[in-house]
Image (tube, rainbow, N blue to C red):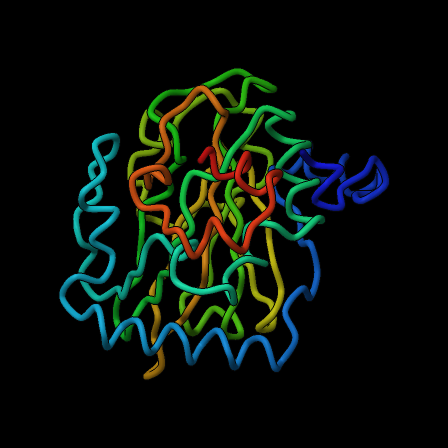
Length: 255
């Protein structure tokens, strides 16, 4: 599957793999052009208008997660089926090489979602994206953030605590206040178009957007093949989507 999608053993350097192993995240670089960013933002705005109160409903309907609406945050889900413009967000070779390095070759897309924190909102407790602690190397989930705006301390850049992917503990089990700043946390401050992958067992969370503009991002989230998807692709897959993707991409979506 990965070879057909342009991934080989040299797609990530050894230095990048080591950094990802040790720190639980990796900046993949500027993967979105200015033109693509404009097209994506425009399409997302169209979807927010047309879906209105139904925006993000695919996550709310999931049998496998409880995903209540987050106050002060715009969400969209199931972007796989909402335009070819979103294909790059889960098929880019460098992304897939990094996911493969964390999870091994037996992985699939769990969800492709949009999240935008609005003024005064976006703070999340430090958390992981799995229901229990796992030992180093037994990773079940891995996420990526595609920056649609410049990320800064002012507009709610994601924070994470490097190396906690190797801790084998959950933040809520040892932190007195998971919402409070952590002495070892870093902010993912970077320009629009950049992409950051992070092992989802690394402690992370959003911060408060203090600006008047939304802080927008797309998340392509992956899991082991034996785990349920956040958004059941078999349930939502459209014929138009199947018509445009190849067999390797169908395997990636598990459809």
